[in-house]
Amino acid sequence: MEKTTPNLELIKKYFTDFTAQQWEQFSALYDLYKDWNEKINVVSRKDIDSLYEKHVLHSLSIAAVYDFAKDMTVIDIGTGGGFPGIPLAIFFPEAQFHLVDSIGKKIKVVDVIAQSINLKNVTTQHTRAEEIKNRKFDVAVSRAVAPLRELWNWAKPLLSKKNYHSLLSEEDRNIPSGLICLKGGDLITEIAESGCKPYITDIYEIFPEEYFKEKFILQVLTK
Image 1: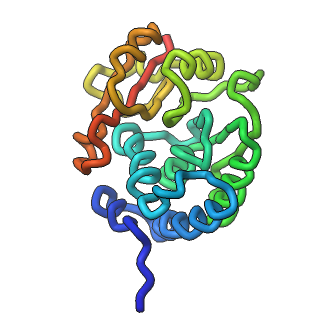
Image 2 (image 1 turned 90 degrees about the vertical axis):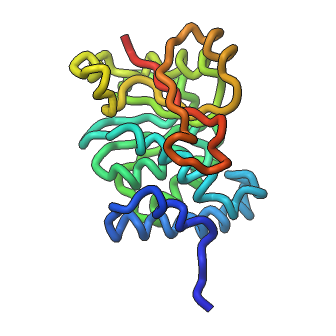
């Protein structure tokens, strides 16, 4: 019997131009995460068979909106098991991703998975974002780590002062800049308390799957 990987075809439903290497890398993720998840709870165990929808495709919603350029540097704050950083690093092999988390065992898993799929544009660090000094990145990404106010306070000192968006029209904002984070639910209070004025993208409009209802991409630009 041919082996099937749960939900892998869902990625093909929305993205069709992967190289053979990228497709092999995405295909390998399920077995790797399933194996590691039995040792260390890097994603919710009840979600492991929905890995491609709830973790990989969710992460790739950022890639559906933004185009990470060659040599662009990206920090993934609170990467956990490697989301959104690992799917984005597969999608954008010429950008450079630095994945950080305060939990060492999760960074260990990220290291092993990145090495297992020969992902060469990923570095990792066992630390809190607020403890990183003397490094700047073009973009910060994050997924459901903390309230927007805290995320922005952590990200702001890590972002380079150059702002790609000063050169862009309002209609051409697909070059990423600032903080890009994945959030869900009613965000009115969280946004108000943050003092930020983020651009908001409804993920359900990109991926019309039930899971993505009330899930959003928020972008806060550097000034």
